Image 1 (cartoon, rainbow, N blue to C red):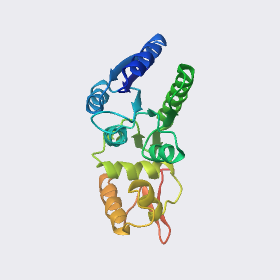
Image 2: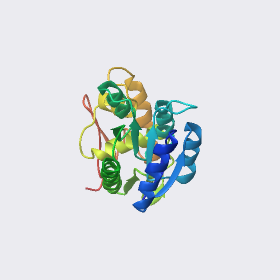
Image 3: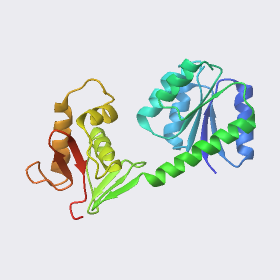
Length: 227
């Protein structure tokens, strides 16, 4: 069973949902305020967050951004804001699902099962190995021949992108779009600098590449040097 943080300011809804989830065997931690909910997310390391948007101290949209800044755990938004624009906005902002009030506990239970199932499947699939290089995406850790690599967040994100597409040439435009969220702008120089830092930490150079192979005029691919 999962640990779930429920952030909902309506006392009746909060108690009803908490009782329902506890009845399913989940461990439930509740809050009626945004900042308290954020503290619970950090301290409890839950498997899932249920997030209302209409909170008294801070809009739930801002809380979603704050949660996403510290963790990738699944978030289901539960709210009365049901127009398409709101749904798309919050899914793009990092929500994993969106449930509009009023909803039944059966609907909520089904959404929770689906999101947790995707999370478990994704976690197992996000432990990637290329040669002696291993990446654990949920833990955001990378090792080379068993030794942990000291990577910045952007270096890890870049290496993870290349590992997900191992053997495939990834363009700098794709790197800017996926890692820096700049599909139509940004500087290739930013990518070049981070690739240079990655090469150094992987024990290689552009002149003597091992894992990171440049395809001139196209991009870079991550390969097993011993394959």
